[in-house]
Length: 307
Image 1 (cartoon, rainbow, N blue to C red):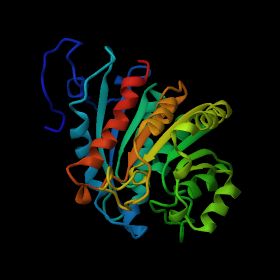
Image 2 (image 1 turned 30 degrees about the vertical axis):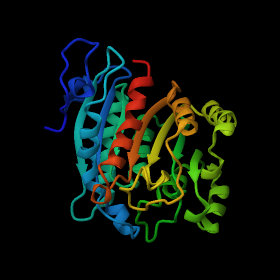
Image 3 (image 1 turned 45 degrees about the horizontal axis):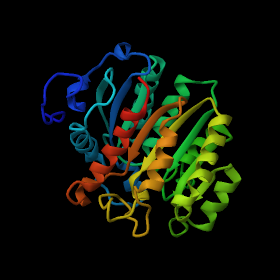
């Protein structure tokens, strides 16, 4: 069993996440603003991007680490729709499948959670949101060391092309990228970010005294759009707390008070409809630190969102 943990009783005061999970196949079972979950067991995009593969095995590990968290909302329920996989290297097919499943859940009124898997899931997750809300302005907040705006070669996407692909379709981006590192992006990628209108906050700008300014930037994006999608790449974080990723970062950010304050501000938005975590790679994780951090970041939404 993946969803299992300490049992302290059935009282609402004692419940943990594993007690509030239901395996489901019917998207009509999703309640308004209820959470629904998919795993994206795919790292073909990482392979194409010449990264360290292994992230495709992450979703169940993140589930396991999430299972024992206490439930803080009496009506909390999580519907688990299983994993999307990639066969024969057909990334595009797996992305299309995830997008279709996400769209069904959002149309039913739910809030989408996806556990990656490589960061190629961003394009798939976004496409699902777009299918569900064809006429809405979708704002994207990308917590990542990378812009992921590389041009797709021969039309084939990778873990680093999602924002290029989204821009080609949308012709505009409403996006904010938090944790960008200069040593992880070429000048061409910075130039493309400016051309595409991708706003960003450098990793070195995330500190306590700057919280108010960053939250104001988040507020500005929120006001410009109809709904928000938050995607978190685990290679944003310092390798000491997030070692199990495809591209570890020696000078990444920490999940300290400054970051968590900004993160909770994003989670508090009533416009937030979707969240994913990407690039957890169990093959390189130490003591499941990366999976634990990823599961904790997802659980913050469960604890802070109004049900």
